[in-house]
Length: 175
Image (cartoon, rainbow, N blue to C red; front, side):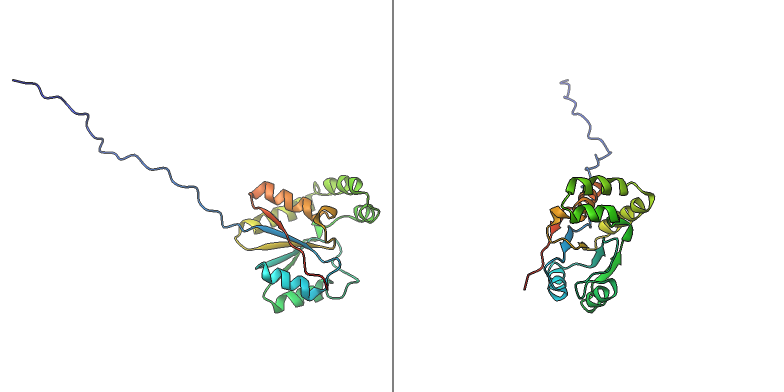
């Protein structure tokens, strides 16, 4: 009798295929400054970028520029279906704003980095992180047109670090 070669048995248990990582619902985090712009152009840019929530990161949500104080801005955004949220504690403290006006970015950075460690600022940064992960398109607003001259760049970088959400800097069309 000739011996049959034995074949390895196929396991009755199938190997599980590795699951793909869940796709993130997060959309790019935008930033915008309203310096040298009018409200309608800023809102046009936000609409074009499909922003769901404008997050005002000014310590003082008042402006000498028409249309950019808190209530006027929120009303204009509402007409376009964009929500408004003021995260005041992510704003720059007065001494930091003074340093920025004087063009002393190193001093601004030092002041603002200390400010971000306060419990109030950390709580609002956590709130912003949660919103960034929600799948809604957010845009941070402050005054300076150039994000490199504004504290919002550091907020955006922190959210990008925490969530992996890329940052996009918007600019409203000038008159």
